[in-house]
Length: 173
Image 1 (cartoon, rainbow, N blue to C red):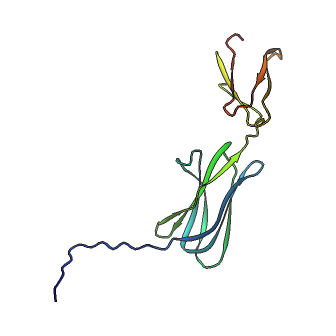
Image 2 (cartoon, one colour):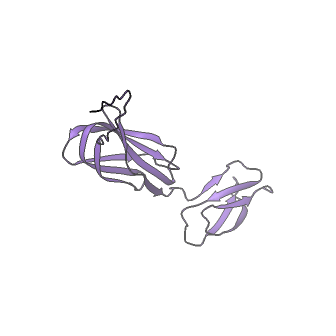
Image 3 (spheres, rainbow, N blue to C red):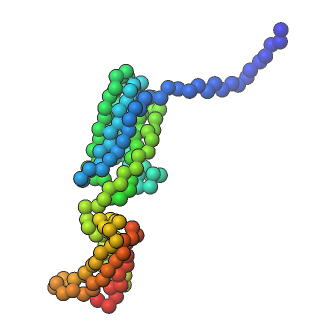
């Protein structure tokens, strides 16, 4: 027979994931976002990081939940984001096992309306201000009035339904 000599070899094997994720969801309630997930099994699972992003690219960790280690029963988890972002944001979980191997969940978008009727920027302006409202989406717009600190009406007008908001010139005030 022929002898074959191997000097270097790389063996790549697929390692089992730390968790079998059955369900993952995030949804807005009145003032918070609930993040919930369920695992079918967990293998050497140390903890979960709950992550949030405004753009689905730059993630920040907003919470840590202890994992079950090794478990072959369904487990339900719940995390409450008490300081959610207004508008659209994204959530995911990152399971980290005892050896540091990470498993990412799918990404879930959440749309949350601001509690404020309007946002106005900048608050100190010499020319234009931007006014935005997500409360009237789909209703065709509305009217606005701007008052001085003394209560005198300075400007009024109409605006159309526009997700980008509208600008008002305040240079003559």
